[in-house]
Every structure is written in structure tokens, then in C-alpha cells.
Image 1 (tube, rainbow, N blue to C red):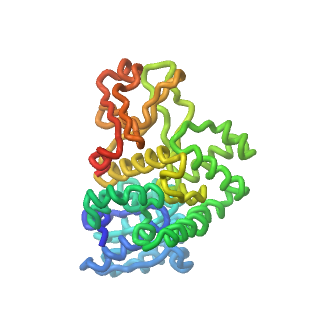
Image 2: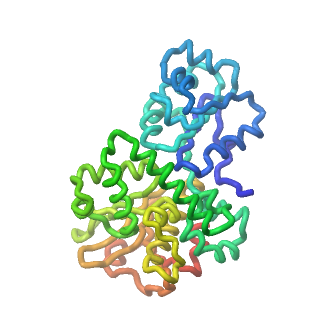
Image 3: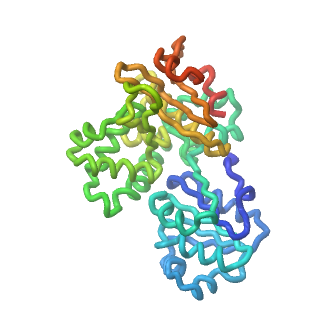
Length: 374
């Protein structure tokens, strides 16, 4: 049994909505069902896939919606992103029924965020559920075992079904199914994306440039799309929980690069499935890239699950000085370098030290990475 980072009991409150975002197949429905199994409240569970439920919740008809919800302490809606104007429907329930509690899950943040954001201002708690974090896996493995399985996590990621799959072949089949049947389907069926092949080509390009600075103009030229379309597609990839964008950090130096971005995949296994590459690390040339992607995302999971507030960037100057990851938290800056080979850079880039005199600088390698992400 792997305990998830969120205990919904800590968030459930009368006349509030818990909104659980996250990619498909990361366990949102399981998290919801496990909570409902132990709750003492009288609840109703429905799915946004149900056309009748879509009709009622999106109707904005007070009588219909209140009749649907009356007599229950808790209403739970799985796949809520499929309900048009779901936020207005939930707002009516929250505002009109004293003491009612609501939970809504959704796999497409660009749908659900837009639908619930404004109507539920001040009435919701938003949680993002990721594939298993190393913190969560501590309930199954100890620190020694996490280290022993490091290469497996770097290659296959940590989607729940992948972690529990018995064989390499099974892990690959699950990842290919998640990519082709779920993640890409969510995006490519949108009206805003007309060229499915071009969108997939773009995602592959981003996968090959994971952790590197990306120029929209260069990407646009390679996939033969205009820059605005590339920018929109990347935004959709991010809002559908496939990639994460990092901007360039700058405060003082004119030679700091801020016009480009770096992209990471939410899960290493998904990244490798996109490029169809599952070879062992000692036989591939992107081990350092995968290491960086793995640590960056584990760090972001740690921030999300521990309720830490901060911002993430990269730092680079036009003369080639760089810091892989910059964290800004509570007014403090931390520069982080990732080293898969184990080589330790003794000194931070000179302009980093000179410009940000109070900043920390750390090298994360295979010896100290668990202290950084647990």
C-alpha cells in the first residue's frame, strides 16, 4: 500500500470545494474513492462523463441543481472537466445548501481551471496530484531501496500502474497506452489543435530538448508551424500535465537570458515513451538530461505536497555561464546544479556569485539527491 501525500480529511470543509487536478491515471479517482470508503458523511458520487449529470450541473437552474444535491452532506464529481460551466453549478450548491461539502476531480486543468476559477473564488482548495513522488514511495521502500531502484524511476517514471507493474515489457506497454490513449488524446481532440501530427512532432522535439533552452522560432521552423501556434500548443501541453515550463531568472545583469524557456516532463516515463526510448542509462547519451528532469519534478512535487511556496527558474548569461535550477523562496535565492556523473563543480559561476551575493549554490548528485527531494 502506497500512501498518497494528500489526506482529504485535512482539506474537506463545509461550503468549500476541493478541486483535485492531475494527469490521467495518476490515482485521482482512487484517492477520492478511498476517502469516500472511510467517511461517515452521507455522500453522492457521480461522474462528469454522465450526460444526465452534465445536463443538471451545467443548467444553472437552481431548482434542478438543488433538488439533485439535497439530502447529502457531500457531493463528489469525478472527471468534472467534462461538465460545461461546472464552476457555476458547484457555486450554486455551495452557496445555497448550508454545510454541504464538495470534491471535484479533473484531468485537464485548462478546462477545469477556467470553469471553476472565477465562480469559486474564495470557495475552493486546489490540489495537484502527480505520479508517485519519492516521498510517497517511502511508504513502500526504504531509502536504500529507493537508491537501488533509481535507474528504474529515471527510465520508467512513477505512474502508479508503472511502479506496480512486474516486468519491463509491462511497464513499457502501460506507458505507451497512457501516452497514446490518454494524454495525447486529451490534447489532439481539442478544436484548437487541428494538426495532430504537427503537435506530436512538436512534443517529440521538446522531449529531445528536455532541460535545454528552447527557442520558439527554432521549434516553429522545425515543425513548420507559426510561432503563435507553437506557443499555444506548448501552453496546452503544460495545462494538460505533460510538460512544465521554466523561465529565465534575471534581476540585475543585462546579459542574463530571459527570452527563452526550458521545458521538463512531469514524468520521465512519459518523456521516454514520447521518444520511444527505454534503453538502460549506460547505453544512452541522455542520462544527464533524464537525471535533471527527474530531480526537478521530484523537487516540485515536494513543494506541492508540503505546501511550500516558491518559484522555479533557470539562469544563463549570453557568455555561457549557467545555473540549472534557481529557487526563489521567502526572499532567498538558491542555485542548483545537477550532476549525474558525480563530478562536483567547486565554484558557482562567477557572475552568479557576484550578482547574487546572498544566494546559495548546491550541486545535486547521486550521493545527496534524496536529502534534496525527501
